[in-house]
Length: 175
Image 1 (cartoon, helix red, strand yellow):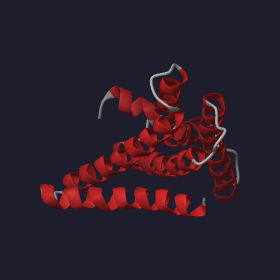
Image 2 (image 1 turned 90 degrees about the vertical axis):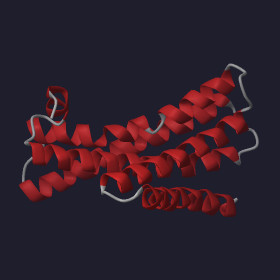
Image 3 (image 1 turned 90 degrees about the horizontal axis):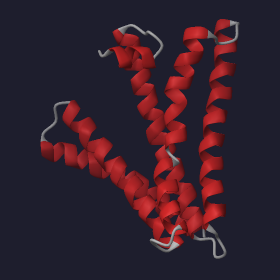
């Protein structure tokens, strides 16, 4: 474990650090799926501007992050009978940080639209495609890290991508 990795999780033992990284990746995948749903919803808005789209993406990421911190703090108080502080608070922030990162890809593509590189609708659809591709990649990496064959890893990636696409289809069906 590198010094940077140990510091990122607040000085956890190697086992605790792996658990924190697992939770962090879970939050990242959850946030990616949530952001896919939000971006698909935005793509169906007729009079959407780049500023409104960027605000919606930012509000979603910040809202998810704050809701997670509130839930983590409440759970901590109930279980430990005290507020989270020090190590526990740093761990909460470390684990929840990918919720904010889920906005980066959509914001970059919305920014590309704002400067005229592409239509806003195209940028939103590209954001969805990149997010679904990321789900596929995480599934593949997960399969390979479990010792699966490359074919099994691709199947695992495809299953994760199908989940992302299912979110897209559900959102589209709602519009």
